[in-house]
Length: 84
Image (cartoon, rainbow, N blue to C red):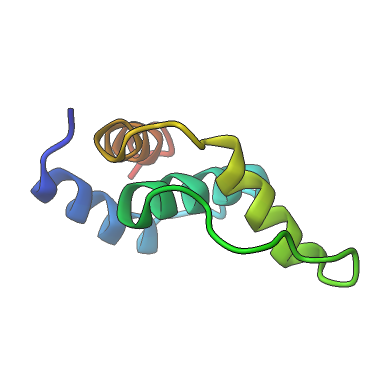
């Protein structure tokens, strides 16, 4: 499991990635971050007129059931795999 310090460092490392990791990786990072910091997805799924909000909602929903500790560890691992 990732410690608070490792997670916080990974959050900062994302800001300094040398290249854009692409939309899929960014959505996964978003989902894991939200799961780690807020828990399960809240609210209604955005409609088709908000494709970005809908993609974010769906990504967060995809990690539902993951504990906060598991999400933190997965986030740190993903950031490391991206070369941060």
